[in-house]
Each structure stands twice: as C-alpha cells, then as structure tokens.
Image 1 (tube, rainbow, N blue to C red):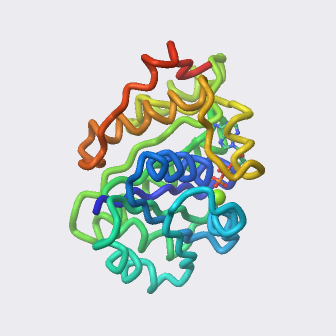
Image 2 (image 1 turned 90 degrees about the vertical axis):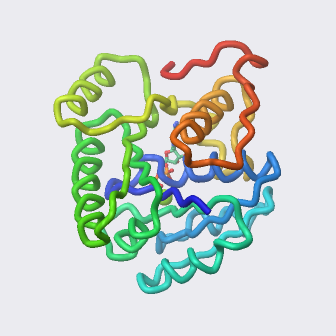
Image 3 (image 1 turned 135 degrees about the vertical axis):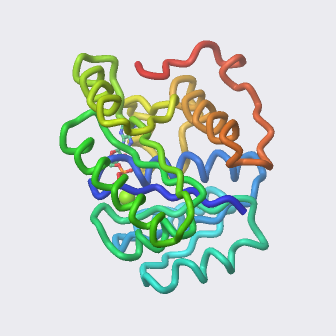
Length: 226
Ligand SMILES: Nc1ncnc2c1ncn2[C@@H]1O[C@H](COP(=O)(O)OP(=O)(O)O)[C@@H](O)[C@H]1O
Ligand SMILES: [Mg+2]
C-alpha cells in the first residue's frame, strides 16, 4: 500500500484540503483509501465524522509511536494511505515521514510558505538519513494564481533546487467549500486539477491501482494555474 504524507510546518498551506481532495476523489472512484489524521486539531477526522460523505477509513492518531503501527494495520485492507500532519514541526510528523513513499509539501506562493516548505524538506532529508533510505518529496503549489508573485516564488524554488510537482492547485472557492459542504470539488475548474495531480502521482508509480479517467478532455481545458 503506497503512503503519501502531506506536510509542512506552515499552517494554512493546504495540507488538509489537498488530502481531502485526493481521499474523496479516489474513494468516489471506488478505491479503498485510509487516512491517518496526525494533526492534534483533528480537522480531517472531524470533517469525516460530521459528513461521512465517502467510505474512507479515517484514524486520528497523534501519538508519535502510533503512526507506524497504524500504517501497518491499515495496509492489508486499503489501496492507499494518506497521512495529514500538523502545521508545526513535531515528532509525529517525523514518524509519518518514516512511512512515506512520497512527502507532498503544499505551499502558497508566499515567502513564509516557501521558507517553511524548505525547512520541511530538511526534516524529510534528516528522516531519510535516519531511516537509511530515500524518502522522495515534492513541493505542491497551492492557492496558485498567475501573478508575478507566483513567478517569483517559482524562481526561488528553482534557485534552491526544491523539486516541484508539475500540477498545482489554483486559488479557488471550490477548495474553501470542502469544509462546509463535506464533499470535494467536482466542478469544471477544480476537478481537472485534482485529476491532473492524481495523474502525476500515478506517473510517479505511486497509485498502481489507479485507472486514470481523462476528465480534463470531457470537461474542456483545465486552468492549472488560473
Ligand atoms: N487551493 C486552494 N484554494 C483556495 N483555498 C484553499 C486552497 N487550499 C486550501 N484552501 C483553504 O485554506 C485554508 C487552509 O487550508 P488547509 O488545507 O486547512 O491548510 P493546512 O492543513 O495546511 O493547515 C482552508 O480554509 C482551506 O479551505
Ligand atoms: Mg490541516
């Protein structure tokens, strides 16, 4: 079972929203998705408790020594594990890195988000050294807009050699609605972005079970960074 961890020490960067989009979309497709909510705030697990919109297995696990056993326990019954982490450096997140096949580091194109994203890459590298294996990580641009600020943020990332996902999530109301509506976006702007992100993850070999439906071609062009 592949495991994808969403992490950055910056709060509000889009960890939970992105995890919800992936979880909800794949569960709607019929895949068995488990989520470990490793954030003491329990945003994702409360969302699931409240709405139960998708047949997800969601476990709120903030004990640092509970993360790897939970991942092992969930392995047999699920196609994919997502781990949503807290918006501050903590040991539970480091143990989540230990379970990760990929760490996705969401960041808005702001200086503070990029700084915290870079700090998070250093934590992943330390965890990889500790685990004596490679732990791949990629930055995911969130709340993206086609502005000079985004261009500048991308230049900074390139200059620092931070690996970036090709897909990005635009700044869209549809993503803000998740917490209120209980469901993840299916509209013609956000849904293709989520599918693009899934296709990119699949292209990296992280979703071996995933049959990509080319929703972009059905819905028209997508506005990757609108
Ligand atoms: N791509 C996006 N566009 C617009 N709003 C977003 C986007 N991603 C997240 N948000 C909103 O930003 C806020 C913080 O996102 P959240 O996923 O909770 O961040 P984190 O889990 O990193 O703290 C939430 O209100 C969420 O709805
Ligand atoms: Mg969160």
